[in-house]
Image 1 (cartoon, rainbow, N blue to C red):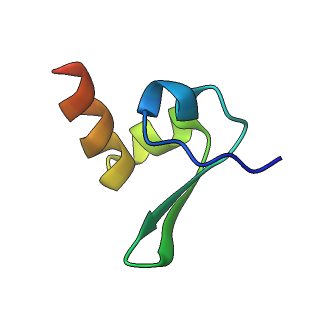
Image 2: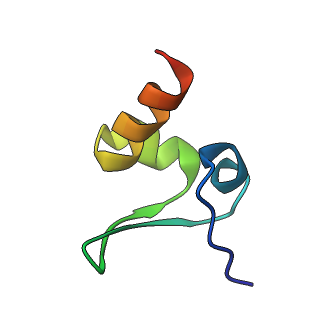
Length: 51
């Protein structure tokens, strides 16, 4: 199943997350992998969670 989530809390539970920027997939992985990479997803996650 493919789900489009605007709330990161929803995306966090997915097996794989694709981060799309300007129509291109810029990151792909699990929540933990993407947070560890410190890229776009990690920046968004920190901004949503104030950390």
